[in-house]
Length: 275
View (cartoon, rainbow, N blue to C red):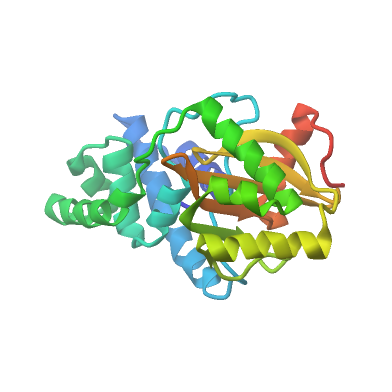
């Protein structure tokens, strides 16, 4: 719902406190808590949309991954789907997630959103049309995905345009989020020709600059990796792969959105983390 780990944790905490303070009888605790959490999320989304109007550069959801998870996640809440959800209204997003993703009956969704079932059905239909194309349509073998991710890291770090050309789709798009805190591209980089010139130029200007891959991971349902630049800047890179080629690159560099990533890796005992 929120695309932010910190905001999600705050909502869960607030819902727990409301649950503890409630002195009535609850026949269906799961439905009761789901209703509270959804309504709190809707309140947060109203203020979040205002903040994003002044956000510096592109906004991407916070990267999520489980350091202990070595295999591809079973769900399909991918980065591309999360971005598609961002284009929905808060009510459309809630209806789609509750009904289509989590399988809540429409009547129960209507109660949660305080709308009649017919209106909720229309919300879900509109949302489904918007996000249909964002569903994973090109399943990729985990071993192949890991190979492509490692090859992309090596080629992009060294400015190897021939290797990159073999990895990238013609219509590849790169998105990066620095939040105005660290250097990042403010607009998407679209097309293989621009991408090749970009990485060649970055290598001529900065060289490899101590870029180190910390570990490969699956980020928001997409293969990718965590890396550090000069031991100072942590970043995650998620890759959308279609027909064996990289069609989408999602780079998170905003340190405010990477605190939970740094904590997870530090707990895991990873070396090479920025100080």
